[in-house]
Length: 575
Image (cartoon, rainbow, N blue to C red; front, side):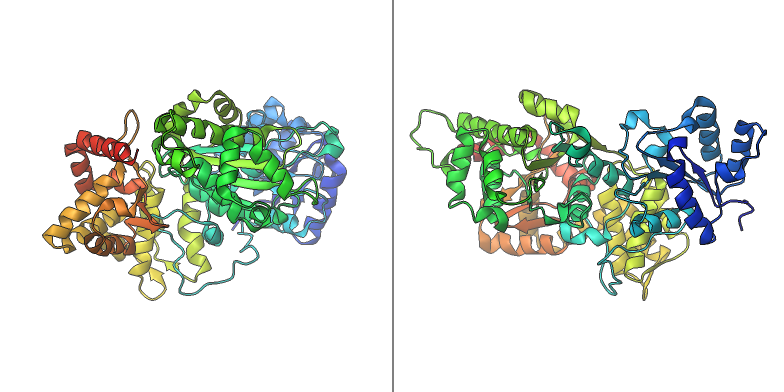
C-alpha cells in the first residue's frame, strides 16, 4: 500500500494556474489528493527543496501544458529532479502529460525525453470533457480507462491475429501503440485558422516507416483509421477513407479505390479514365477529391492510406500499359510506361497532400529498407524526410498490453508467469511482433477453459517454434508430389532481396500452376494462415515466415539466382 501523502503532483506553468486549480478542486472533491503549489507551498520555505520533497511524497505527477507552453518546472534543476524521480521509481512513479484547452503539442525535440513515449490526456475544447477527465483520473489511480465505446466483452472470440496484420475492423483488439498513435494524430491535426490566420498551413502527408514485423500496417489500419472514425480529429468521424495497396499497377489500384468508395466513386464514370487522366495531370487526384467533397464543410477531408508502399518499387509490371489502354504497338516500352505511371502515381499523391487548400490526407506505410528508393523521386523524398513517423521497438509495458489487454476483453485469463515468459523471448527477437501474435493465437487454440497456460507455450515451442512447427507439420502432411508443388509456390511468392531483405511477392494465382493441383494446396496453406489469398492473388502471410522457417530459408539460399531469373522470365513473358 502506498505511503505517499499525495496521489498526484500538479506541475504547471503559472499562467495556467486557474485551469489547473479548477481540476485540482475536482480531484480533491473525489478523494484524489493532489499536491498544488498554491495550497501546499509554505511561504518563506525554499521552493526547490519543497518541490523535490513533494515529488517524493507523491505517487504520480501530472505535467500540464497550456497555451503558453512549458513553465518554470522545465528549468534544469527541476527537470533533473523529475527525471531522477522517474528513473529511480522502476516504473512505479507515473508521469501523465496533460494538454489544456487552447494548447498544442510542441515538437518532440523540445519535449523532455521521459514524456515522449507516454500516453497523453488532452482537454481539446474545455475542462468539462468527461472522457479526458476520466482518463486523467485513471492515470492518477493507476487504472486502465476501460474499453472504449463498442469494446464490449466478446466471449469465445480469438483476439489475436497470428501472422495477419490487424485490419480496421480489429481496432478493438489493437493495443500497445497508444502514445505513438497520439503523435500521429497530432501530426495530421487540421490547421486552426482561427488561431493562426487564413493562410495557416496544415500537414496532410505522413509516412509511417518501420522494419518488417514492426507493426506499421496494423498501427495504420487498426489504430489510425478507427481513431479517425471515432472523431479523434475535429470532424473526422464524417471523413471518407480509402485503403489500398499499390500492387502491380499503383495508378489502377488508386483509381479503383477511389471508384469503390461510395462518397467518391459516384462522381466518376470509369476508373480507367480516371487513371489515364492522373497519368497526364499531377493535379487530377486533388481535383477529384475537391469535386467529390464539394458542397460539404471546407474542413472535410479524404483520407487515403497507401499500405505497403514499397510495392511501388518491388512489383513493377508491364501490365500497366495495357490496363490504362495504351496501344501495345506503342513505341514506348512497357518498362518505360511503367516508370511513367509510377511517377504519375507518386506525383498525384504528393501534389494532393501538399497543395494549399487541398482536402486530401495521404498516409503511407513503408519498410525502412526501401527508404533509399524514394531518392529517385525528389518530391516524395522531401515529403518523407519532412513528415515521417518511425515505428520502432516496443517498450515492455506496451508489449504487456498487447498480451494481456486483448485477453481481458474476451474474458481470458493468463497463467501467472506466462506474460513474463513471452516478454523474455521478445527481448532477443527483432521484428518479432508477428511471431508473438502467432504464438498467442496458438495458445488461444490450446487454452484450458478460459486460461492460456505455460504448458501450452512449451508445447508449441515458444515464439519461433510456433511458426516453424506449424509450417513443417503442414508441409509434411502433403504427399511428395504436393510437397514439391508447395515448395514451388513458396519460391514463387518470395522476392530475393538485392541489397535488402527478402520480401514476399503478391502473385496472380493463375501463375502458380494447374488449378486442379494447386488449388487444394493453396486452400490448405490459407487455412493454416501461412499464405493469404484475395481477389485472385496470393502471398506469404508475413515476411516473418520467410525469415524464420528454416526449410524455406534453405530453399531460397539454394536457388536464389534461379528465383531471380524466373521472376525476370515471368515479367518478360507478360510483356
